[in-house]
Length: 433
Ligand code: ATP
Ligand code: MG
Ligand code: MG
Ligand code: MG
Image (cartoon, rainbow, N blue to C red; front, top):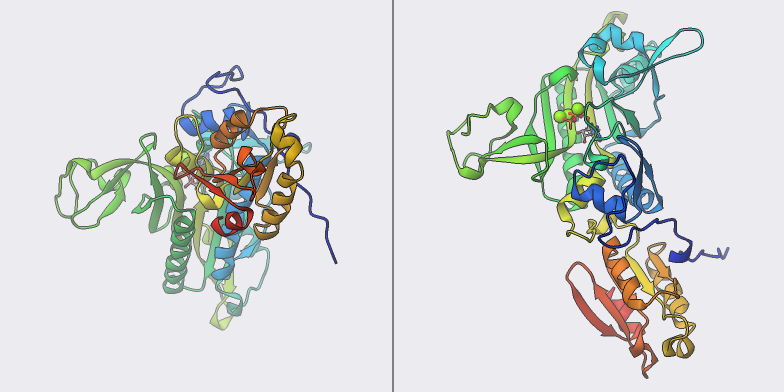
């Protein structure tokens, strides 16, 4: 069946752009990072209240790409996608003792019958309770890995850096259940490897370090960081012996606790983009997440918990890769890969090659399915639209300009990341892209 493919047009795109360098920010928005400023200026996000954001269409396109990468890697390790409820009974958090540890960060709500809930900041309790409701669980059902990608709620003392420290943010969280510690450890390593593959695909340099287990508990914990001067964590990364740890764990002695190396650049600032925990029985025991052991006795499952800051990764990648006034996305996360700029209304190109932009759109969309945007805001000059396209950070800009009227027609292609310009025929263009 032939499906009519819609044309993605800039004239229809909901992208409330601020003019260059005008700093027209909504009141009550403290600008604290480059990514926050760029994402607000370029109409990617808007702030609703401190730490709470509207994700506009370009943000959602990019998030969908990240979600797809994560889903594929999760499928590879046999993890199954679920949706846990946002509301978690407070009493589950009382049973694990966590309610008092993180009390001030919890958003609490009551129902009309005075039942107490929290807006979940993470779902260890909810996941363990789910398994506890299914009894008996046979040993044959394990290992089990369940994950979701959903909004999390934390009453952060100081929401800032835009999406990076929000009160409502998107996390991917995975919970693993195994029959014993040895198997749980193998699962832990398997998930960490999947996370490393995800970060490699995103293409931003990252470091995996040892972390503290904090109020989450458990025996092993690793964090994944993007190195950035605005990172709020201090990361010790030893070039001599390879020891890598959050300074919370390593001490800040300004020297490596393993080999004594005290190089100047031993400690860097990191943005925490992922965190993994080997939890053991901390949640399964009090919440009765068990399986049926030999002699039909109930045995506590060994759990792991693995968070990826989906919305934080998006902002942090922009933070690390962008220029002062222009977003640079990791290629795999750019909302569109190619933008085509059509001639200005009334120009000589407009009358000579009127149908060419749409023809090029159809051709490129056929090859790069759903990755092409047509900037048909033809009342604006080509120069102004090229500027907008560079600011928004589309990797390739195709301009149907003056050389398009020559025979044979040539199109200008701007390779934005490498700051290169090429004039190519239609056929060369497809090969080039
Ligand atoms: P941080 O140290 O930055 O406060 P955390 O250690 O409290 O983060 P975790 O509980 O480990 O966070 O949550 C898993 C992941 O969720 C983090 O690694 C991070 O990527 C993301 N995350 C945590 N808090 C926020 C937030 N307020 N806004 C956006 N993402 C967040
Ligand atoms: Mg925190
Ligand atoms: Mg942390
Ligand atoms: Mg953490």
